[in-house]
Image (cartoon, rainbow, N blue to C red; front, side, top):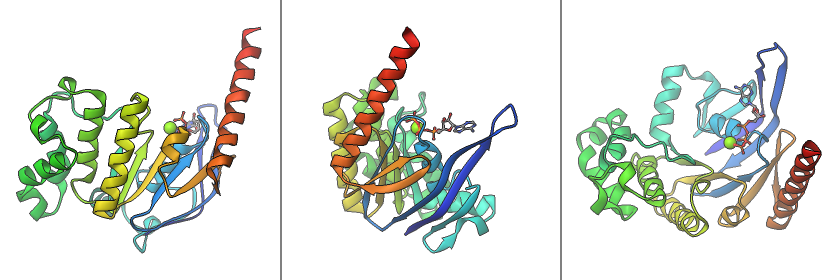
Length: 249
Ligand SMILES: Nc1ncnc2c1ncn2[C@@H]1O[C@H](COP(=O)(O)OP(=O)(O)OP(=O)(O)O)[C@@H](O)[C@H]1O
Ligand SMILES: [Mg+2]
């Protein structure tokens, strides 16, 4: 469904120098699959997610999404493909603060197919029902707990039945128990709707809910076991501690 080959991404810094973030990423994601991407802070996870979600374009390499070469599409076509096929879930939920849960979930349907547009009220309510929040439909985000807000965000991400669901640290702002509930919900929704789920995390427990774990390190992605992922994260944590210690003395 998604095929990423030798993708690089570099940005130009204010001083004119080039920062190479991704150096040759290869990845294939199949329909309905659950993949976790792990990596230390600054490894380029969000950068990669923005490429997978057709928000940014790679510096080089190719991304094929459902058989289409993303590079060959105009901005408008790309935005249309993204809207119809990709759902996003973010760490900070990113809900519109002065709109109800229902209105937040309706939002993507305003840009959907004519059928989605005309049935938006009902479809949004169904999506909220799927995350067990139909009874909170008329509440504002601030009237909901963090976990509930994230469930609204999941309903919003799924309401157009995307082929690909991308989650960037979806449990990062939640306590452990709520985070686990949210991950279980994401896995269940992916199974029920057949959307592939790519979750970015530095939480090992979150990674353990995936069928496949990939580690982003030195600008490349490689498949790894849960044990290898744990070791890599430990090494990063040790290195960070050492740096902090050095900075303090
Ligand atoms: N537009 C940009 N201009 C300059 N530097 C950038 C830009 N985008 C990303 N970077 C840098 O590239 C690196 C990777 O950023 P990215 O946000 O992808 O990391 P991440 O793995 O998501 O980190 P975190 O876990 O902290 O969210 C960082 O060092 C970041 O500062
Ligand atoms: Mg990030």
